[in-house]
Length: 346
Image 1 (spheres, rainbow, N blue to C red):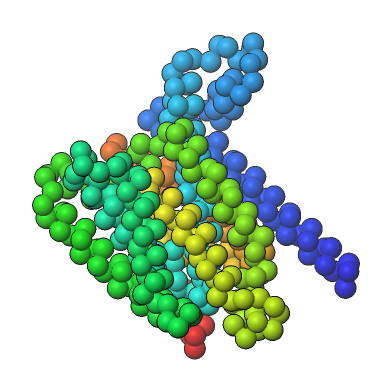
Image 2: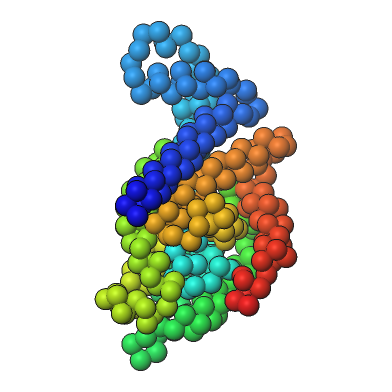
């Protein structure tokens, strides 16, 4: 038994190592793609020249420095962080709600963030920055949903989901009002924000999102065994000494924090939090101690590739939300056709 456990642990770390190497390879290869093609060795040399003061790397052109270090590297890192946030959040929500069709935006966070962003775009002189408003209203939407769903000190899952739908509908209507009163330029900016994209990615965005992602992800990963227990039911959780209400609240707050932070920087990117956890479970099985890190890595790989497609497929950059939706919708159709009864609880 002990031998089997050790072999299983080795296989888990091997899989995570392979996914990590795939992420690095995808990141470096994708940084070379674009209007200006840069070879893989040149990308490595350019990044190394900034990290290490080596004399033989001084011959790299200033153009490569600007493109790789100032534009593509922070954009790729931001795509990795957002992929980790959305995939991890989706895993948490699906585990806590015991529903594989739940995704990070189920509690109205996308509509709340959209309202905050639209408010900042339409009235730039009266409010804070678009990112701050998107983060604040995204978190506020979830807080309102949780407050509406709480009855007699408890928060039933079904009531919470319904409260999230109501909250999302209200904020969605408010976004519609702002679209109606917005000028043409502001309306165009709102529409592009709603479709998501890494157009303005920079080192400042990476520096702000990194600590939120790292701390939240590590806490969620450590609590992976609790999600395993919670997915078995509240009675089983209580029998093992776990307070299901408190554990769910902490996990949902962390997942909401990650989602709100990601959305505030890049807008709404659909399907990642729904699709990636499913794909991960097909590879790793249902153990959340493995699903959480593997899902984060797969989400990062997926968004790096989608972002590269979005900026290289045509001369004008395509919003990444369109790319993820084009892939995600057929995937959900496949899931419903192949495992419909199990997905819907049949």
